Length: 462
Image (cartoon, rainbow, N blue to C red; front, top):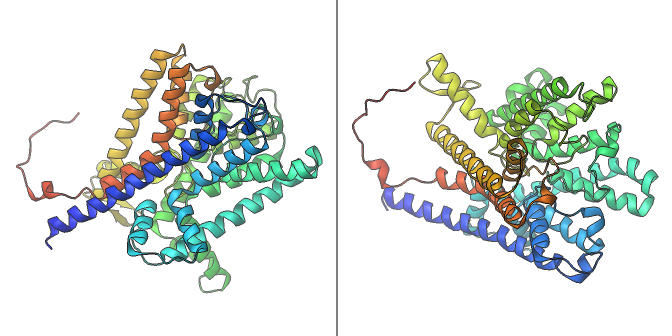
């Protein structure tokens, strides 16, 4: 088999996996929508299909935009369905399917291993079973820890039964970066002065958004430090390049978002203006964290100033990290483009990060994903603004939130017309499956086109 045939075979495999992911998420959404239309799912005993479809989509796509108040519109059955869809969407169809296979003691075929490799963007098929087990185990541990911390705030307020239920729901929703809660109509605004609730939520959001690959690298290095195999001073050096870039970008985005929010909202009475200095810093930090595709709100998004809205859209568009529960074009994509720009400025021939060369194929792929993502954002913003009476900032914020699967809204979502709701549904779906499928597609698009070498073109840039 020659190189061209191998490339073609690999491409066909990637496309099969892509189709399975697309259809898997679509099937989960439609199943959830049907369940939410059942009379037992709503307090009133009836729900129109569009509302059920919107809620199922925002749950599976772990977005958080809602057209009806989750806490009062849905019954316990409806809320359990929503929670199951959130967990399914957060971990991904492939991960949960693989976990079920493990529970049934079914062996992983070569095709299943390749599908897992493709879905998670892993470089090797070695240790697939161990990887899935660690993903599920780590998820359960972090969500349980978050639920226990929430209980210290919710049980005294709501009682044991409701306090535990609210804690579990919020922990799963926060870790999966869904942003859906069942406490009340104002998200976490009633807890704007509660460091316990906001910091617990931040912890869960960040853990979910870092990505499982980063988790294990950090855990492995720290385990070696504890075993005294690695000195403390060498911790950063022992992290792989992927982990270093993700941690650096996560810190930079959270810090910059916090600073911008604090500076532009510090004297704004609609957001941080009436808080003490400590609460202003806490809520500015939480606002920056939740912009990383989480969707919980401790301050009014409608009251944000225009500069904050603009920066928020940029942070939402970037989103979280690969192989995690967050959305957006991913921090690694943005970081790769930053390093590529630095290489041009410094006159380097290669794109370098932490003394490692980033392959040209990765740079081109990152550029393609960013351009396509931005083009999609512009297209759907125009469509939403053309069909709904919204201001530019409200419309762009809403579409960015949907495409990046964030879930924050400037009080726009419930008032959208039918066309507007359908647009947002499509945005949420594309935002969840788009980055995954695009990376897979561009990552393996090796065809015979590369065998032809054309003469260099003489063009002028700038």
